[in-house]
Image (cartoon, rainbow, N blue to C red; front, top):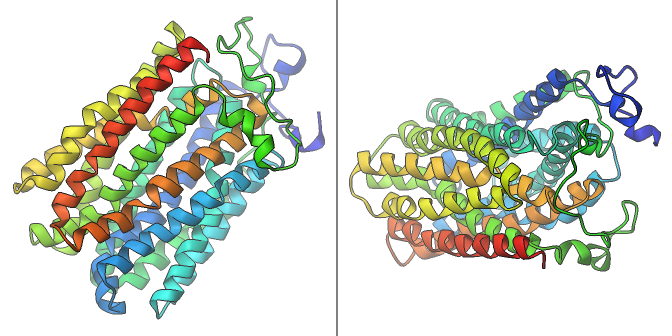
Length: 442
């Protein structure tokens, strides 16, 4: 074992274990890690949603068209997606703690500096560059969680971690809208950037690096029933498309990536444009529009993600495609709610649809990476997370804000948002294919 992979100078011991398994951390700390990473992820998504909530003020202050507003939303997702494979490759070769805290400080500083922007181009550069810092965090966090939680608790741990996405979206959306309404959009952005910098300093002494693959060393003799590809790239192989080819052809990984791209398109479309839609359609204040667009779906997603984690762990014990079945139900049931969000003229009905969409989105989200980790070797989980982020954010998240902005130039914004439900139908088809390929083992 290399020095970098040592879990820490004084690792707690687990009673009754010998050998490699004795070097794992206690069960309590494994859940404490989820809490620490939850806080980091909270600020990651708070920073993102803060910009969406102040779109009306940005448009007025910098005189931006809807297309340029869409480009601001897409710029982050595009660079985030492009850098995903490289970030994941790096995560598998450095300490995850360094990647997590370094990424947090990097994007928080850039978020703070973006408050100084006086032009569209300057804001576009800062916004896009934030994607570099956030791209390395998520693969590192997922890889770390997978080394603290094995198959028995992995979906639950990742489902709980996923709730930070929704909490961050709520916190960033609502508080940014409220602060911007009183003090301007620059103060709102600076607020979240500054808090992120302070969090990185506070976590430096609390987060510990685990041994890679330690959670897969079962204490009861059970092994993962899904065999990992034997031709997966070596952990220290040079980054190249040829080295990634075995992963890209691992059933059912390509279909899971495609489903993620489709689901992320829907999520980014609603997250980016729903505050502006509610603001214009129902004549709400900026703070109220931001609150309604964020709080209702994200709180519902927190419940859905927690339920999805428990359901998926139960289903995974019964069959190898259990996690994918939970994801399939999530996107299929979410289709009508997405359509209602954009087409209904009743504010209470739109709020109800946002709750329904949020809950089923949580079912899907809780297993995005847990499903993939069932079929890839532990030393490559950072790389796989980066590849999935690349596809999901570059194709899905990167296209959605701009595509909806372009569509809104020729049709009502609500109708454009409703049309995004088609991508949920595509995601359901790909997940159905994923389950079949996994059972067939081809």
